[in-house]
Length: 597
Image (cartoon, rainbow, N blue to C red):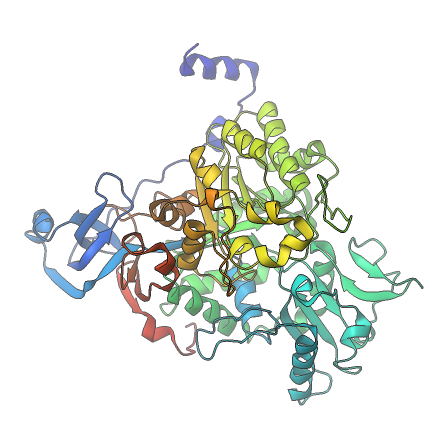
């Protein structure tokens, strides 16, 4: 039976009703208003287009690419329209603007721009990098220092980046009381999933065990009193709900957004996904995203992916309609696309479910659904509505539920270009990779699981599982479209560092151990993972991700070509500038704070 016959047969069975809504349609490019052309010349332009992989000139007008090739090749355009030849990148290498397929830009800006407790150094776009706190005593000393520096005794202290694994202890209220018994303190852990509060915080908001008896993840001590631990998304969101007005101050949010804007720009990123839109506040996030993408001072295109749970909580049975309606806000720099679900816990705090063989201490972590059937049931209304589904998935059980749920969804309603995306993919097996290929899913992997986590995690996971986290080589060899990401604020957005990790499988620590070298990929494959593959992961590959006629004129300008240098040096390639819609933004211009509008 040929493909056409199969489709007719399935339609007759009623299995592909609404088929058109489930297809990832290619948006035709808009016609540029060609009045004046700018031709950028470079030592080398790496297009990520396999038909014309390299060039030395790219013509741009009205924010779009007109033509790619040599300066001579531009003549069909330049002979007809006024043309400016821009030679400022004549000694540089141009790539498509890097695409961050999985980050949380607003949340990352809010947290990166707060007092930090990260164990590793953190970049600062506007000043001196944070050096990191190497151990628990250093973390507690730093926390007390932050508290003592605040003049208002009632002002809440929000810190970010505490690492349970690196510090060797999960905080409780008694530990945080050592920093202050009077000031409310919130410590947001580095995974973004967990929060810890001190006694003063509990008293300040009058939180009682009865208030949180139906909130999953709230910790109690042996006497039934709150222990200050709010673990995983529902518990974390409880704290945001009661304290959000005090820690998410409207007048500070634009500055926080500019912080991550500049950090991403300095890393060569021109498009970023927002992979849990609505987590903080749907109305606020909609308003700030629209303002951000209409500002001439900002440097990113945003692709928000709605988080299903807050939409369901707010809108009930109208959640899907309200999520779909967000596309009415779309413009060239704001593109709503898809929905997100969480399969299990976090990789960093070791709360992901690990049953086979579990953690070395005998624990097994948590999953958000008891079975793939339950998980598929939660996603089915969104699947039937044609949404591109993104899954947070880390442990062996979480990955199994994510993959088996896709099988159940496909069985219930076949879709051909569903782009079901498994994000993070922390501890996969070879069987999982093979099944993903069979089901037509794609993967976006977090490379910090190797570069910054493998050395910290292997005591609890074993060297083998810590080594093959993400399994990039296996994914590429299987022909699965794969991208890599930072999951900022989980790690700082740094595409070239992620590419370096993918190629070398090395960590950032002094011994430079190579973790599962057989899963290394080529520099060519790694650069696809931060350009065209990342764009495909977000469903915007017809707009960005390669330097081709008709696409947005978004470029990353580098000092050298990551594909033409020793692999060990890839992470050290300097970003000179980005170009967004033909507008040149030198890195030197984003080194100090400036207003969003």
